[in-house]
Length: 160
Image (cartoon, rainbow, N blue to C red):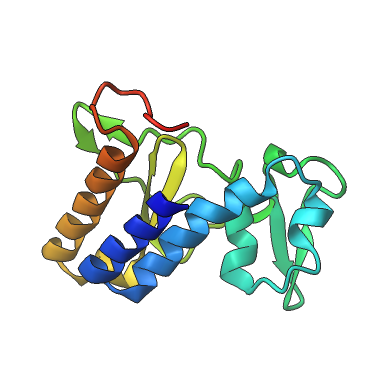
């Protein structure tokens, strides 16, 4: 929790509130649904459309969030999440640099996404399109996130 709060403060200072909120949702919603059924993770949660689709096994229909996997385990993906809540197949760090990706289906509020040790980072469309400086700041935030998780830079998270 302390790491997430530090990251949110850095993001708020660097990129604005919208990016901080999106990163917080991407960092916390997936971990909140691991091991839950799709119905438990999606339904009756009072999610808005963005929150619903960020879960990874939910779909938005008739202004409500529904399970896209029924009573199956939410970690199986499906629905708006485009293959799972943690963007498992995304490579976030290549040759010592942050690698940004086009958001998959269900991550429509993001202009770009990456992962840091399995935690998704979503940069809002507005922040990503703003200018090169904004994209540089987003990369810096991801780098700081890596450093917070892996202080000795050995490629292994220090606090599991």
